[in-house]
Image 1 (cartoon, rainbow, N blue to C red):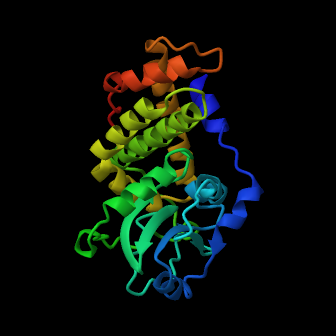
Image 2: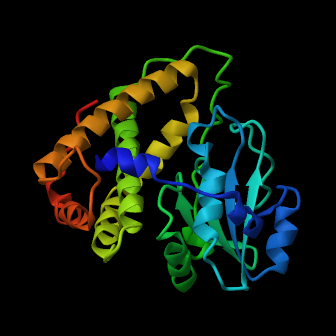
Length: 272
């Protein structure tokens, strides 16, 4: 089954970790100032940060093929994911993990979310370098700090929160498919382009979904989110079956091409 293969196929090795330098938040401004281009992963080792789990190794794996000596790759993390350190004048991430690109100390773009795709990350960094955002265009809305997940019981998710959570689950599942297909022989560009187009068309809602996920981290929230992910997995499994993809064997390049052509036939998100 292509979804199962996609979700289990991301394997990163510690051999790549040496390419990423760990930098404290306190030292980050000085590091940015003395280097031309820096890609920073903001994340946390806190196991309560659901999307942070494995993000460090995925980032190491994604940047391992990089060869441009002018671009440095670093990671900044803090122990309790929702207790952000002082960012000073630097823009804060909308959610964790997030990969932000800086040029001479100024943010010029970002690649958000969990790194399930390893083939296209460096291409996205290159695209940001070629088309940097201006400082005035890099506005990050201030979000209220999420509550301590151990302090109060979770309130029921609203219909809109469930819709946004469903959208983020769909993005992660699709990213897993793209990653899996990117490792197969053949041309992976059509599927990557279809996924990038889908992501761009949902950017506003995905940004809002990141804020929802940032504030929903209790055990009760995790249970509700897991149920939504299971539902969305079933929905996308039905979609791939409808495209003629067998569920009892590993997907091949022809199956990935069917998915690329079938994005327009993807079922709409369920309400709530």
